[in-house]
Image 1 (cartoon, rainbow, N blue to C red):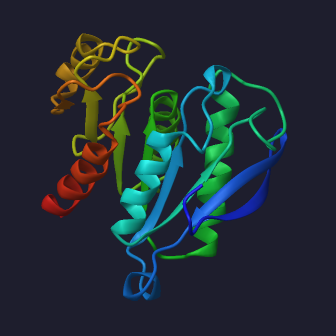
Image 2 (cartoon, helix red, strand yellow):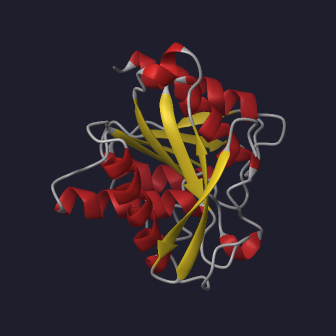
Amino acid sequence: MNKQSKKFYLTGHAGKMECLLDEPEGPLGSSPRGIALVAHPHPLYGGTMENKVAQTLARAFVGMGYITARFNFRGVGESEGTYDDGRGEVDDMQIMFDHMTQSYPGLPVALTGFSFGTFVQAQLQQRLEAQGRPAERLALVGTAAGKWPMPPVPADTILIHGELDDTITLQQVFDWARPLDIPVTVIPGADHFFHRKLVHIKNLVAQMWRRDI
């Protein structure tokens, strides 16, 4: 848990959702830039909202002035229910989206996630586009191409991947990103979990987000 994280609970379709909220401090906190929703890796393989990559993404967005929220998927920690192959997880992420946009009206929303969490966020973005209220932008780390049926994502999506990822290979990500014509930023020497490379994720997201605004 990040030092400033505040625990709260929502009610999802399968019951209680255990959530964390991180708010910017100082001047950034008085006029937040937006909302960021973080999605963690696969719940059946140890993925939780405390995952180091998920925490790093939360810190990156808080550092940029975003009010940041994440939650444990079904069956993880205090969250009720059982794993639902991504379907229920997307439903619950929309509940988080609705809660945060109602709590902080008028702020743009960023979607970010790691591994399985990228599949959840890409699916949510498609749903939000159909509803006429798409997220501002996506930042996906360890994109789950080849593991789950990743849908297309917007052209300005930030894609970060590890050179030595043997869970989701760089080639799988290239094959998915190529027809979308979206660049993939590769961190040399990084494995799937970005051991000893987390600072690069934080720095890259911050640099690329600022550079393109």
